[in-house]
Length: 318
Image (cartoon, rainbow, N blue to C red):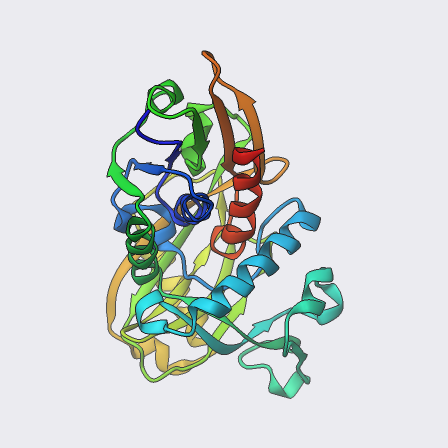
């Protein structure tokens, strides 16, 4: 066979997994249904933070592994798209976070008067903020430089991939709902608004994991990303004008200058949430091959990508 492993799915989870496998000396091919700019990962904000991710115990360890990787990549932010940026998580208290928080340097509980906008509690942090279009292109380039191949190809059955490699890794996100099939997968719709940055340098979030609406803005060099929504079961990919207006209004309550910022565009992505959380599991394929499932990362795919990639790579080699 031409390759040792075929990774199906070309988002951040697929790219991270393929990279870890290539680093271990395997010949790896990625098959991606979508070009990089059209993947769900390309729509992500994307701030490192364990958000809407289960199982909690494993997710904390996966997130910390990824945090270390982003720390290494932030050395060259222009190439990797990774920068460490200061900001505030509103409506959050240190005591309400998981054990992982003790390993994150610099988290600080704010006094009520330090929290911006109509909020009274919050945590200050300096965290990785990732420009996803830049980052995905960087990861693909690094993977290909290691001898990996990236091909845009839709897979309708894992047998197609198994015919060309003894191990297949399923990083298909929400598409695994039909491919596996896994009825536990469900979409969580996220809508964003892109505006010209009016000079904002710090990020802000107020994200209740049980709410359908969130408030956040993330500053990138050429734009400010405003959000957002977390609409369970909603599969609409067309931006909703009323939702966009509400996002801008919520963000402007924190930073009034956002209200007058010129709108550059709108994005919608479907987070791949799963009952029971992330699935990383090896199963046999007909004919003797092995299929490693690696999906269900919800709203934290960027946050846990590298920790989960190492766990999936262990199953490939195990």
